[in-house]
Picture 1 (cartoon, rainbow, N blue to C red):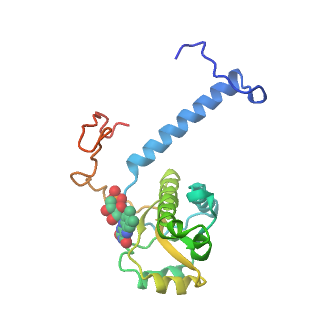
Picture 2: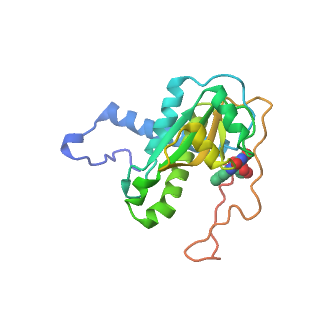
Picture 3: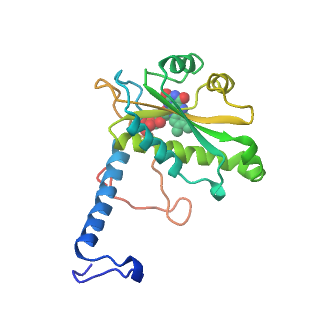
Length: 214
Ligand SMILES: Cc1cc2nc3c(=O)[nH]c(=O)nc-3n(C[C@H](O)[C@H](O)[C@H](O)COP(=O)(O)O)c2cc1C
């Protein structure tokens, strides 16, 4: 890019000099931050018994809601569980819930609302939407110095009862959140085949020499 390059903005959004430099640097900071988080994130199941401040949880909830939904519909909602007694009850009905995290974030769907958006939305899209929100939750948590993992191995009916969900709502995914224990697990090596990428057609080589140096 030449030094004299100036992007064209509509008249009412003209940005100059220092503002532009600030915007560019904010953009590059955000990018570095995101890729660092992508590199560092791994399933964490050991936590410090330290509560997560409310303002951090607010940011994580914001990230969850920033994830898209099919057709921009509003059938997804979030339940944040902080009460240690409720967390304990959830753990008792969740074989895949390891470690004593201090917060559990449930991504949920209002099933009745989703049905009004069509059968395909109800059956498929809501699950994709939940995954998108859960990923945002995890990435935001890591960006804030926290850690956690997705958990799907729990008894849905029992958890719904514990959370007091109305019968037209369901939980889709649980994300455990907390401060990672220093003695916590190390990142797993990705399974063979987990990074397969093709160009244009199945089987055609996609070349990348990035490795972990993104
Ligand atoms: C949809 C989904 C459900 C998962 N459910 C559980 C679970 O119930 N319990 C658990 O300990 N980990 C669960 N995990 C975490 C995976 O086991 C973990 O992400 C995977 O082994 C890859 O490791 P990594 O996250 O460190 O890359 C789940 C992950 C996903 C994406």
